[in-house]
Image 1 (cartoon, rainbow, N blue to C red):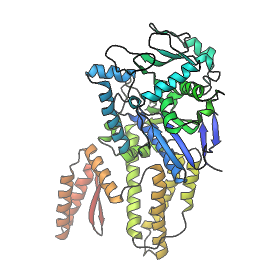
Image 2: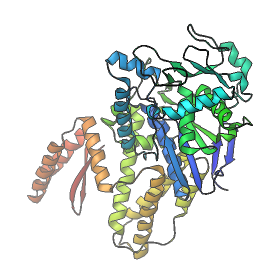
Image 3: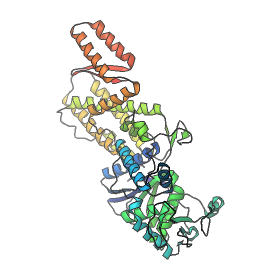
Length: 482
């Protein structure tokens, strides 16, 4: 069996065969940058990051395109509230987004086009649709797509025109011929950014932007178009209609993108995350007190298509699990140092890759890793001198753990560095002063040298009451936060 993906258009898992053997074109709808990235963004882009990593691990050459929408109604409104230039404000939030995605371990895309830099292609694409009769300009500076001209409209979302018409309307000031039609170009309004076009100064509608950027950077057909489930309708449905109409006389959706993939939502304590409910978290909010890799580990624990239930307690649990993984790696590295590597790849590592082949099942991989780490920990802690075979097996474990981890985007830091970073975050959350802990450890060491074991035990108990656990080893005493 090859790589299986769940195709939204097909409604089931299908075997993935790239348009060009050995190469993959992947487009992921990027953020509309009018604020800092939130937890839902992290969930979305971690999911597609794993897709990119695994496809590349399977020796496919992936061109990963993820855009920035930096021209949009929300951006214009937020900039007006702040008294800022909308393009400059969007650029600042785009930089913030990149910083946050770096912090949760996401690879940068190969191409990151912005709407503001893609206007010639957008205008050209709209012009082609007008010329072919799929779009019309009522003469007021706007251009609309004529939905009824595209027979397959709504197929991705499994909606028909009659159902859609019941909820459609024409807002005041619009010059649509049909309530279902949507804007490709919006005539300029005073004080808003605007660009030249054959229909007058204005700016693009949301949906045409992604069509133009995919066609410019990936051509058609390309392999996978991805994004959140909330984009299935209308955004992706409209993209299909306008793109297929522009490029294909057959009006076939698959002439644009061969496969469509969508990730599930984030819920907070069983409720959908939203600002109105007051349960809205930005990535920066979370990373002030928690480790970015721990957040990623939590997100990977749920299959990308399923809703993920988030709570601060679960993030704390993920941080402790990540600490355990790095502690095990540190132990294995220390015992296996200089050992001859067992040449056979671990069966569990192959099983992990097979799970990723099955629609990128990260939750299954984490289950496999948990068993492998438990076994490695037991082997490392087993009493008695380690044989060359024992040490070689631990060396193989550490290598395979990091190799599988690379496909998930975890376990790539040096173990000691990661453990210190996790300890620093945990201490900050508990209000523990690391300098105080180090001073108490030094005091305890002096008491032990003086054989004052009562004082030594008292220091240990004092720190334990604060939530600090001491770990004595051959190289001295270290500590962690429970």
